[in-house]
Image 1 (cartoon, rainbow, N blue to C red):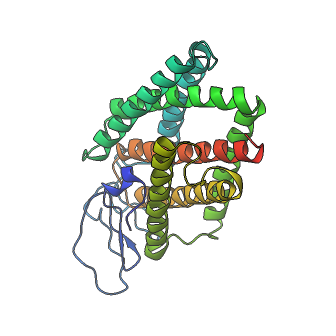
Image 2 (image 1 turned 30 degrees about the vertical axis):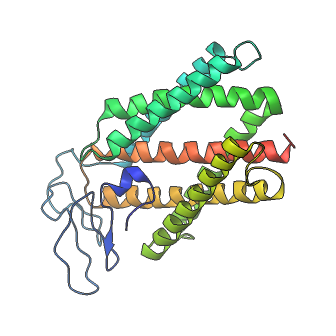
Length: 285
């Protein structure tokens, strides 16, 4: 099962006959209906049937606590740099071009760091934190702009909305109301590709034709695509949760928790940006 998250897609997360196939690890095909543990030779792996270690645990397997702590550190870096850039790069008539120029530059640098990490076989914490820092600069300026032109409550509403989506998906996943399987991932991936292509086309028409391009970010269509974007982000979260759960169950190395944090951060940034756009449209700005 490959994730639509580019960070996880390089790791080859997959399931054969319903069995997890590992962080970039391919195992021989099991007999039909038999789960294959990609970490069968891993001393930190657990038996999914009993939940008991298959060998003495040596303390180097990924745990939920590892994922939570790395995610908190990564998101904390985003929040701190966003707050600093909000204060240091005000979006007003005197500083508008400078602030936007720095924000665009930071976004491009963050994208480069994200792509470098995505193509590496192992996580590099420095790259992940650098991505988070530059992403925070971009979000700080953009959030300041939305706050200035749509009202100071917009950012708080977007943050609360993002938190609610995260909590809602987590509860739904833990209650098994969401079944993350190959078909689910394939559908989400196809929908995400189509969504991104439409947004790129709309951006090109807006850049060269003026106005709002094809109208995908304003009016009724803007509301519809904003909701679709948030739903896609929620689906990404469900896939991320599944991959974290499988990694913990099958004894993934502790360093993989950095990849989990990286992927979750990217997904939450996606949802936050879609929330900002949707709230802006609903306010008529």
